Amino acid sequence: MTTDQTPADVASGAPPGHPARPRGFGVLFLVDLWERFGFYGTQAILVLFASASVADGGLGLATPTAATLFGAYLGTTFMLSLAGGWVGDRLLGTRNALLCGAVLIGAGYVGLALGGWTFVATGLVLVSAGTALLKPNLTSLLGLLYRDDEIGREAGISLFYVGIQLSALAAPLVAGLLGEVVGWSAAFSVSAAAMVLAVVTLVLGSGRLGEVGARPIRPASPSERRAALQLTLVVTAVVTGA
Image (cartoon, rainbow, N blue to C red; front, side):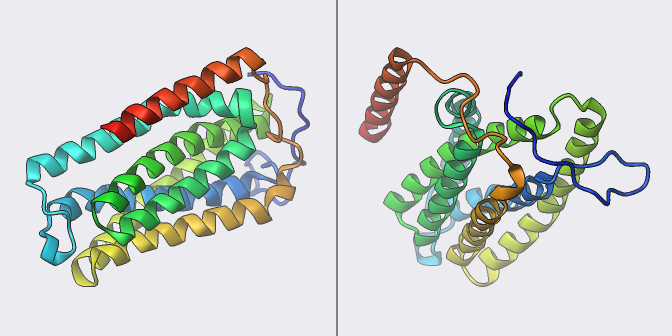
């Protein structure tokens, strides 16, 4: 991927023997940390929540149906990521797409915390759409920070995976404990709170990113924008009609 956007300044104080990290690296690391916390927490309890009885705050689904819901949620998220990357590259710019994705995910977790079929269904759609916007554009933005520094990029991605593993370890424990002891709403509320932290981190730390990702790399033509809008309307109609 090529771009004429100016990279953020390189941060000082990197550990001895490690490549220097761009100033915006910490911002993206924390955003990814909080987003993955919410993702893995929800992944750990979604089937349990959906199969729990209505009296216990769940949806009361049969276990196979709850597992199907879980699979549809994950599959939709990964398929939409193709469109999410296109939106960042061609329409909004990676940074704006990242912010929009974080807001959508947080709103989706609020819907899950509220409970009930309408809020849960809406929440899952918002989380899927938001994750599809956030993940590919966050990865793209990380690459733009390093540009041609391949060694530094590899070290940065490795450090990102440390944050992912921390979230993957802590989130299921926290969400599972809250879901079983306090209630499912509390478990999803923690994921929503994590996304609030992600949004605040991104907004307050935007200055450290410089101009990286502020504009689309290859802006879409008017005809491409119209086609994207028409496709979005069709997909939305099909989903809401179903």
